[in-house]
Each structure stands twice: as structure tokens, then as C-alpha cells.
Length: 364
Image (cartoon, rainbow, N blue to C red; front, side):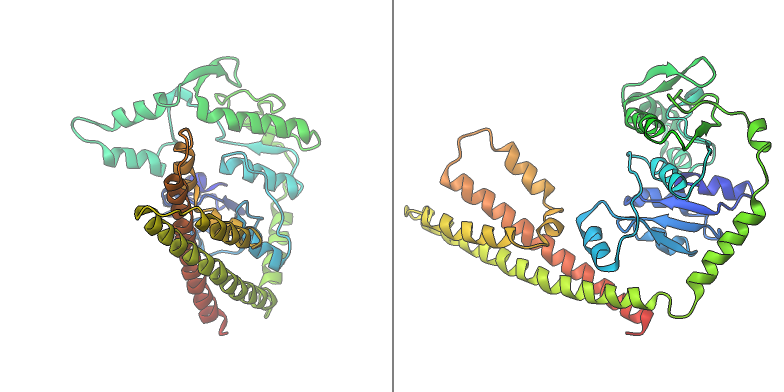
């Protein structure tokens, strides 16, 4: 199951063997509010919102991260294994099943559209939240209508020969699944959603077909018990925790050097502004800034701190249409160095907090 459907599965008496959760957004964690009693093995990614790991207490396996900080940690701990990312957690869940050898894969609930103009399944968190947001002048139907219409809805063929409403948000998911079906023909995929969007290479299957499949529950349970026994062996996590501690300590120290450079950059820009405001020539300060830029470019961790600079970078791009003056150059440099300083301080603070929590849990 994926995070959005786990609650529905548990309410129906189905405790999935695995649950895939890879979303960094807080609101997506709310799908798991009533799911603490499940025993699923969690497949996740290090950028996933931390609240997820406080909600789901079962066995956890990380896949490779798509983000710089996660990539750095993985280099210290060893390869974790990549899962495909197509914009939806369902794409990662499908790729997980492909990698562990499932074929055929039967999917349920991946409609990629709005059958009967329904945006979410009954009882889902987002549907319930829409009701809580409703007011007299903007009832729940108002929010549902906007969800249906804001992304340019249009009709596409469905699995039963009719049409179903979809929109631009769903196009990338549709494209991803169709490309995977083409790229991995040995991994057959079937859809159990008669009113879902028709996907090339993923035909509709009936429930009767799935019920005729050979019984595998005993074998699956045996494999899962073996996995849990292996992970429960004393000391099995200790080597990785030691490497992780060393890697985080090293990163905190290295980020301190970038923080030093950023502080020097802020001071240099301030000095240039002071000279320029008094009528002096501030061009000479650019050479100092170039040297600082070269120091940053040589750091192997520049991508980690630079990941949080998107807003600053976009504001510079937005101003790039006009002819730049020395004042504009200094203003852009000030924004970049202050952004770098804020990013390194934030990363070091979070990493130090993580290091302390790791020490408290491992006794080191």
C-alpha cells in the first residue's frame, strides 16, 4: 500500500506487508494519523517528513535519496537501492514491486482521474479535511469543484471503453506508467480499476482473475519472518550507526568552513556597499568575492547548502532582464552569501540535533 491508502486498508481488515511513503510534505503525513497499529514494513526515503517515522513503528528500509544531503549519507553507508520517481508515491511503489520480483503486478486505486467526479476515496484524510474547511459561503462542494477544475480537466478513455475525467496533474503519472510498461515488458502489470484512465501496456484485469491466482500467503509470511529475525539480531544496526555518526560529525565540521566563507562574503559585500555609497570605486571588491566563490565551488558539500537557495536564485533571475550595475551585482552577491549563511547554519543545527538524538538512542 501507499500512504494515502493505508488507512483504508486497515479499516477493511487488511494489514499490508509493505507500505511505501516518500513524501516530504507535512499534510501527507496526516493520511497515517490512524495507522499506528499496523505492522507493515516501511519503505521510505531520507527526505520523507520525520513525522512519518514517529507514526509507523515497524521495520524500516530506506531507498536512495534524490536530494544532496541524502546522497551524501548514502555514500558513507553504502548503496541503498534506487526506486523510480514519477511524481507520485504510486510510481515508487510500483518500482519497488518490480525490483523485488513481482510479476504480474495488480494495481488497485491508481485511477489517474476522477471516476464519477470523485477526487478521493470515501473517508480519506483530504476528503474529510475538505468538509472541515467548509463554511456557509464556501461549503465542501466549493472546494471539491475547485480541485476538479483548477488543473484544466479533460476527458480521456477509461479501462471500460468509456471516458473519465482527468487533468494536467495526472499526465506525468500516466506517461511514467506507460514508459515503464514499455521498458520492462517482463514485468506484466494489470489494473483493477475499470473506470481508471486507460494506460498503454497495462490492461484491465477482473477480480475473478486475481482470485484464481495461486495462494502464496504462507510463503510470504515465511520470508517476512526471516527478514525480521535478521534485522532483530543483536548488533545488526551498530556498524551502520557508527558510520552514520562519523559521517554526520565530518559534515558538520565541513559545513563550518562554508559558513566561514559565507560570513566573509557578507562582510566583503558590506564593505563594498560602504565604499560605493561614499562615491568610491567598489570594483576591487569583486576580486575578493571571486576568490570566495572559488573556495565555495571547490567544496564537495556546496550542493547540500545550495539546495535551499532556490528562492534567492529565482529573485536574481527575475532581476536579470535589466542591465546590471555594480550596485546590482553587490545586491545579488549579498543575497547569495546571506542565503548560504542561513542554509549552513540551519543544516548544522539540524545535523547536530540529529547527532544528539542518535547518541541517546545508541548510547554513544
